[in-house]
Structure formats: structure tokens, C-alpha cells
Image (tube, rainbow, N blue to C red):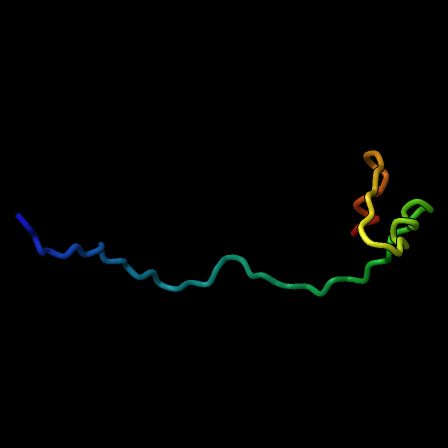
Amino acid sequence: MSSSSTRHSPRRESRPRTTGAYRLVRTPPGSVEPPFLDAGQRAVVDHPGGPLLVLAGPGTGKTTTLV
């Protein structure tokens, strides 16, 4: 037995457009002062060569130095 019936997807009801309860406002970024770097961090920033491996313990400012 072969059937040639077509399946129809359920009809989608359109929703009325409403304004949202929230309004996104983009504020311009404020000026940011560069962080104070110690001698070790400054050496990393001033590294003239290619890739550099930075080994330091937690809380020593690696992310601040690299970003």
C-alpha cells in the first residue's frame, strides 16, 4: 500500500508585537588608566622577541600583564 498524502505542519499562530519591558542602552566606555606594572611585568610587556612563556604563581598579575 502506498500513500501519497502530504503532511502539513501545524499552523503557527502569529503573536502580536509588543514592546519589551527592557531597553538596552549602550553607554560609551569610560577612560581607563593603564595598570601599574612591576619590574617583572614590565619585562614581559617589553619582550622584543617572539613567543614568551610566563611562569608565575597565582595572584602575581599574569592576566593583567598579558591583557
